[in-house]
Length: 282
Image (cartoon, rainbow, N blue to C red; front, side):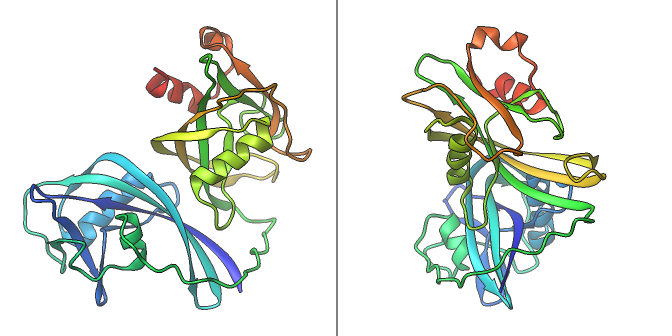
């Protein structure tokens, strides 16, 4: 069997009585939403999916959770990263079979039940081989997790992007792409060790954003339609040490260091790190 990955986003819309809007899927029910397209913000995917499945115009209030699951589909084991948003809808009657309902009283698809914190079976999946990477590929969609990471003294942990990668020599938030079968928060803590030799704990989910560059130039040495969905967490390192890069040579991280907040204005930050500090570093 082969591995395959996809990214999807869903919306939980509650009315004043606590009922949730559901869309029909065969004999069961699911949250409206769907797959995130190439170059599409996950929040936009929710709005699009809500309109298609319920006929209602929705808007995103906040991101509430990020999970991952594995399922067998034909001869593939599919890893799906699922982003859950709290959404609101304009007044109207749902159509296309959608309805308001109590999740305790409806048969839910297993991943929908898990998104809502309800028990659901997770059948075992067989081992699967990673897909053979095509060196001539011109499109890539990636799921990644990063941490706005501080220590008890308030210092900020950053990593410097290695030569040959987009944004080379600028300082970035620690983190990176998640592995097959790995949740975003677990992937972040693994990357934190590999890139900085620091052991942290996730204390909150801050945001989900995306980056799309139709002609990105990286180690492939040819233009790529590159789309990354990025989960941002708040992370604390309770016992900080001297940062060092542990991952194998040739990776995307050249260096790691702690910085005092007062010095961040003098640091060459990439755009993602600048926005994270502007919005979430209180």
